[in-house]
Length: 422
Image 1 (cartoon, rainbow, N blue to C red):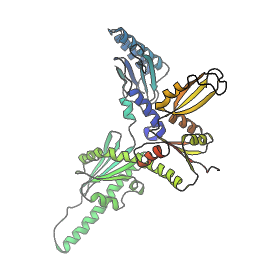
Image 2 (image 1 turned 180 degrees about the vertical axis):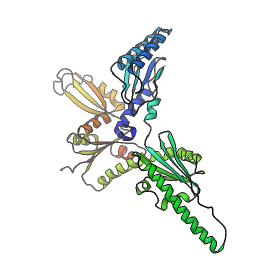
Image 3 (image 1 turned 90 degrees about the vertical axis):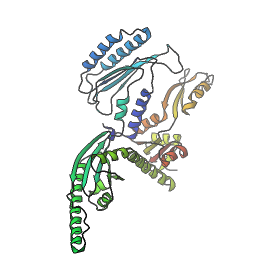
Image 4 (image 1 turned 90 degrees about the horizontal axis):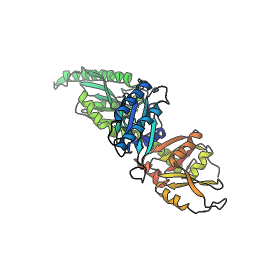
């Protein structure tokens, strides 16, 4: 599945894991990263690790040598669980990492296996003080395809941009004669002829653009550009297929129409592309706010209310702020097995756990309560949503509507499948 087909929840989860790995640091150069692409055999990776094991045996520091060798062995164990790398490859991270609040000697071996979001192209081994996640992070950048169409009265260029991959698909000359200053009747005939040539040229440009852009399944939008007013004449003339005309994200000024002009657009593109997801989020939130404003009974918000309706299957779309910082803690009595759950702000979890010390169990009164499980509320609610086939939208705080979701509605809201009875 490409990133273009992934939901906002899937992308959020994968980004969260990779960002966590990117922030981990070893005490020394002893964290192992290995990328195994689809065109390699598992045996190739095992042979590579076997050679690296021999090299690492010469490390002078006893502690570092032991940690590196243990990390390589752990990577080998993980690789042996697979018959082949699969269609996308495998990425493995292993290493001894310092534990929170611990000093030297508190390291614990950790290992992570990730199936990348798209096929990896590199066969990579690194032993470093950090995990090398940059290749995965690049994959997570928006990979939808954007069309670039530059046009003026003399030339036109059609290009596509997918991630960092820029393809100039076609360049064409107009064949339109230049403007004349000749006076009289001949000048008017000349201008009519030139207008006919321009119209034919615009149709030719649009025809090629239609042929190139329409077959692209994940075409997210088109950026129209060029020097002068020609691009606006082209846009207003209705030459493009209506489906493409509706995908024009922005019209930008460039100094050139050829490759240099395309690069000008690429420089401006990140801000234009960032607007796309914001527009989608704004539309989702506007739908929610419409239901709120018209008191239709088709929405709810707040963690407890949304949780109840998720469990009953009444939620069509779950809206969660990406800045939600709450933990779902499961408390259990070790004496009688009594369990209860609490939602706690992340920064208050340690204080909540301390407060359980000596507190009597509501069922048996024994002072045996303790937190036995902690889960991010986003993941907890998302699991409930998936069980009831509910759409999940992770909303950023980059828009005014996204900030409203977090600040006015507690970061959790829902659009319902049907109106709830009072």
